[in-house]
Image 1 (cartoon, rainbow, N blue to C red):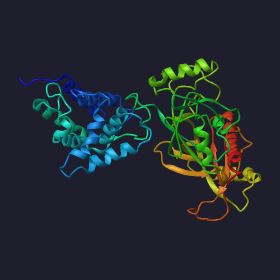
Image 2: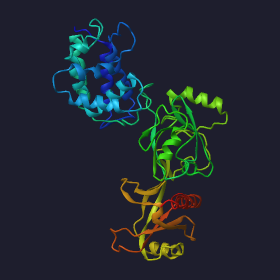
Image 3: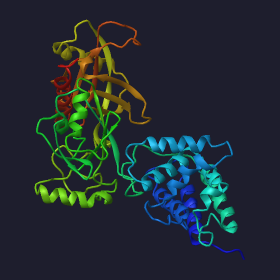
Image 4: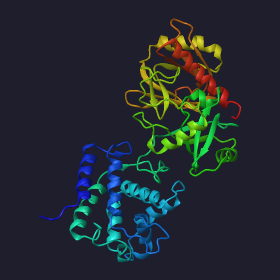
Length: 436
């Protein structure tokens, strides 16, 4: 009977678990981090440290050295992966770079090829202890390569930008995008701790507070593609000042995981923040069962999308109302749409920072999107139950009439929700009109 290695046996089980999830493997797959950790353990097993011990050697250095010592002339995939890893400014350690490269190789389906290059490069293999390493044992290499071939045939769709915690952990935080209009300040109080930019609180009345997307305890990972990993005090403000007058796109990391618990790698940092700021109130977690502040907990007429509250409303129709787009036209524009008895649709109304998007709930087909400056007015219908609201927007070129204004009519679930939506669209006017 051939010898067995527990790491290979566990990896095989893990891959089988990955295969039970039909379709693409994403970052939310519960077996992904275990699979990556097993690959890491196999690559580290038997890896010897330099005699002088000045630098800790990890499997990342093995991949890096392939570019110098593998003379086969077919290193393009490996070279590209190594170069992309080196270019990532969110990675500070060999451990983080090695983990990033493993994820990248899975995503590009080249992991089997990378290990093949490693196996026929003696100058790198000599770093491994032949009595311990799986890579130096012919009886183990063959089943290992067979497992890698299976992985290379699977479809991995991984977010390579969500990598700021790979230096510390294989567990990834919940990542979401927050779009902000050009502004003088974000409306967030920040605290820089251990190279991370934490949100301490949101200023009352700021767009960040109104939008209910960013929460205290979350981390600003990057602004418009500029990484804030290992940021020094005030760096976020410097970046924003350089981007003055431009829309901002913030990549945020949630303080909690999707299931509701605290994201483990930042537990100590959050504890330190709490000691400094006893009044710190972390934002709501997705699965929290406790009542939260008014407006923060989704109701049956709401859902969460990338951390934002999205309204579930009825789209009742739209019609051209002529050349006048003032608020006074709503009271005859709304009845005009209702009289047409257009087929209603249940839709998601996503009120983002700079624009709103309406998508059909059943198939997620986008019906329309409008930036707030394109909307000339918004308001509620005074009858019969105050749940119908509408806004006017310049008529789109694809309609039969290419000039004038179009009245878009929707129905909210409650009077309160209708008022809230109208107020949020009006807030969008206030935060955008001054720079357009």
